[in-house]
Length: 222
Image (cartoon, rainbow, N blue to C red):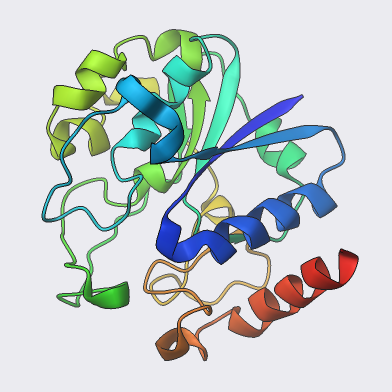
């Protein structure tokens, strides 16, 4: 059983649904999908929203090991994504030597704002936490107390680990940044980090037509 947690933002509910559908229809093994949804976290998450926070799950994503009882492995994904390959292929890359495995982008955004006018910020390890393969037992520092009080950089730059040697590298195809990475027809997970096709201003971005086709298939399957 593969455990997948997807960040949920009320403004992008359709994105969550399409991503969940795209994961399930391509999976070759059972997959459980749970939203990281503020209304469901209760007292586990009590941070005030930060001015630079672009999504409702910017910080709550780091509760995934705690939500998994610090057992086994879990996958976290942002909701502004589309799965184009079997998630079991990513699951097979688990490495017990690592606490977390990510695509180690050197992402240096040029623009000052992103979707819905949200501020764009630049920092080391940017977008590393948007897809995480988490070895939960080795992420025990991520208690609710720590997640509620640590700074954004401490969380997103993995300062809660002993060091960068605990971070394993995943192939780039597992977090393809649309608009930044060179076009890749073999991308396994597409990340619409500049704005998804569900927003009008992003309708012509790479893989936008593919997202709309996936949404249509999801609606027809009902």
